[in-house]
Length: 148
Image (cartoon, rainbow, N blue to C red; front, top):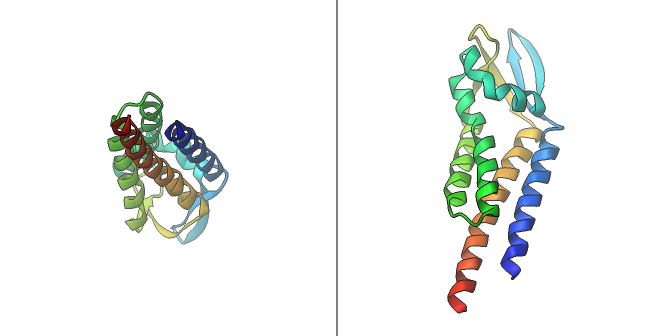
């Protein structure tokens, strides 16, 4: 029965961290010698259409969001596909930290990433929390089933 509490705690904590991340800046970028912060909320809403402006790679990173959502849905339904989806989302989210440039404008010109901000790290921690919680949940639930 304790493993069900882990499922709920994992989902709630992950969603809370994600929600808080949307209130923060994600990165500081340098575009045409103008340094500016970009909010996580802006990237959240614009990420799904990044490919229209030539941001195919940005689109791929943004896919960590729906993958996490589907992982939550699968976890809620006790489907083990949640493990794979959350691991893929984690890899995508971490891979963004290795980028030095990001699409700066719809023209396809690039902006230098000056720094990653709290919003990015909270987003990353929400996905890590989800992934770790899913792994713990399935490990404990399997152990509980085997002991019955």
